[in-house]
Amino acid sequence: MTRRTVTMIRLTETGHRTAAPGRILGCRVTDRDGNPLGTVDDLLVDAEAQRLRLISVEHGGVVGFGATPSFIPVEAVDEVTGEGIRIALPSAQVADAPLYDPTVMEPREFCESLYGYYGCRAA
Image (tube, rainbow, N blue to C red):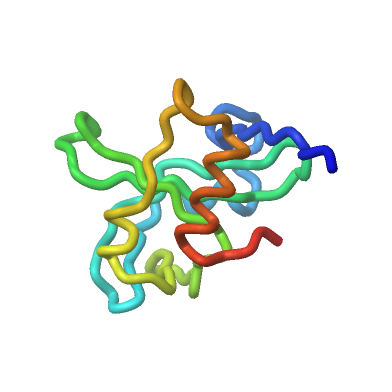
């Protein structure tokens, strides 16, 4: 069986920032208990499947410097409101999630690893 290639494109690097998903850029993200996790820094789109796959949530840092991104599958989103996004996971699980290093891992491998870590199935 041939595995398909996965190319992830950051929404902020496209001309589609104003599309419906782009409206959540900068939104506050909380865990299942309402604890703050950070803000939506970007959305990653699977170019071949043309589907939104991951939310990049930045946390820490000062005035945008030194912030660390965590990637969360869109399937883990529990609720989107005018207040922000709530995910159906505890903050500790997000904090311990695999980090993406493109020099070590291909996007497909990272997505499979991340989805497995969160116990999500890609739609």
